[in-house]
Length: 261
Image (cartoon, rainbow, N blue to C red; front, side, top):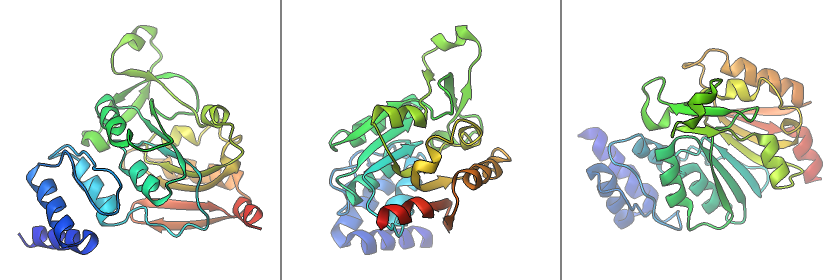
């Protein structure tokens, strides 16, 4: 009971008395298909009694992505977009930004599409993020629910015909598609796929990335953090390292300092 009251108090403190109470009521009673908060332009759809609720609270109640940006991002990649909550946060904070949101799970992707459909310049991709273009399937390998979906590469051609199989997207392909010189913000919450992503084929796009916000998943798959930092040390001459909650933040100092001059 005390925990619930503290949470409701946080809702009202962050969103105001009426909006906060209304949002808290909808979220806590499962009536959360359309949650409206003052900091977000359009209502957000959440699935009751799922990881959608704590994810919503992490981002909008506890300010997980309220970072001290040294610049205004104009191109953002949201890898592991889930139902689009980080994309929504960034589009409301940086309304002129283009966002590419990537999500492999079919159920998550449907809600991602619905939640972001009213925003301009948001491009959603039903795919996993990988260093190569291959076929993968999305699975709840670690029994963590909809915020813990991982992708597994398929080598059997027959398995590629299954409904839950998608072709991956690479960051190089996004760079080519959008004709990018730099990636302003790369947000990654890709549930262990970071170990593969930073193992190969990263030296074209990684040195051109200004800022990375990543959740590392060594508790699920050992070696994620070491692989990531090995790539960072290779690609960046100098960088700033920060930590906020579950997120590791890396700023490409050389690129940022050059472009801010």
